[in-house]
Image 1 (cartoon, rainbow, N blue to C red):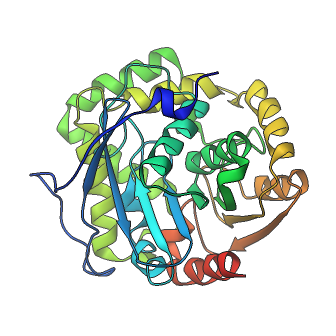
Image 2: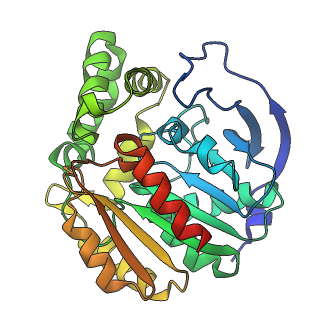
Image 3: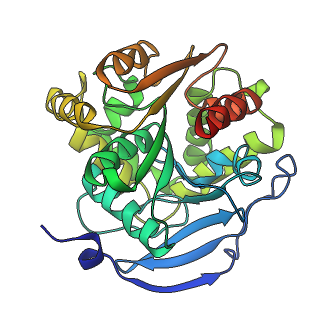
Length: 316
């Protein structure tokens, strides 16, 4: 099997910001500086901050981007070296022409970690990012310190209907083509944010508008919906997450030696919170923390509680 060093080559690294940079967050209070690096010929956007402490890498969910960590990134950087990146086909990272397998993403993450000269890292993954973190921990156990899994797939089959539909061939093609309609894109972006949050009014107004704006902007990128459709087509069906995927993850979870904190929103309508209980039963070294009045992104709806609990876990 080829090594990450064989498959991914760091070509260049620059600090810049996209010309169409969206509104800055003034609650966190400044959005981190965008940096770009070439990994396997993929122009990849990432953030980094912090001068000391153990390294932490934030991994976003399917169809998302690094901005989903804006309420946490600067807080963690006070005591850790922190990193976040957009996956291929997400955020401001370019798309790829190969299959979007979870192993591919895990190896892509390792290429990034290698490029930053990091030996051992904590991984914090939300939704699909949590699934990638689990895969990474089995592929690179010696480089994995602690895991924070935030409403991740892999423990059970249940999944929200909209995500199941996007993975279907006909519905997925309609999803991709309809992204050319700006009005439809804006409405869908608002709908996405409503779906991942339990209470939109709980989230900082600027943060909420930034989320909507990012989903809207990404949906207008050529082939922007392909990564989402390809991932869902591969791992889900109309009935939910495929049994074969859950079977594979049962094996993966059983191999994880790293200590893990599972975090779930009590009102998550994307992946039900009872899957967190299943994860607790399946993992060797795990604890579960549930946040009340909270949806699929606890780090955004309850950032102070999330930051406190996760930092306590990492620093213990």
